[in-house]
Image (cartoon, rainbow, N blue to C red):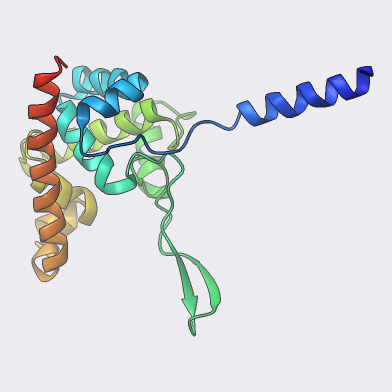
Length: 193
């Protein structure tokens, strides 16, 4: 085999390995299965819990709702007249579906300018930072996944103005997030996490 062919194969192999694993874990209804498949997720969430006081189960429930644990998740495209692409619905990106402006605030306030939304440790730290600020500003417990999710989705000002009250679908989603957090907490207890 020629040197050029070997170098090309090696380069192709390295390029295929460097993109990151953005696929979702299997069985998203089982917290123990998720952390068994992706121990790095648990490590990141435990670090966030130590730093910001946000329980792992709450982080997992919000991550499930926002991205289904897909690291490079984006909002759908908008179309004019049903066919002309008009860009994405919002700038939300990554595991935590953080908006550009909120992510910029996080980077500035935490002194973490190289943080990336598609890196699980940065995404969970962002969620911890945001939930910690919500708890301080609005008095919502960090264990209250339902109300924390409403504030996460609507923004703190939107939550304070009760904008979610006019969105019954969102209140159902938030209730589901709260129920999932309880389920994940019980499951994590059974598998010793």
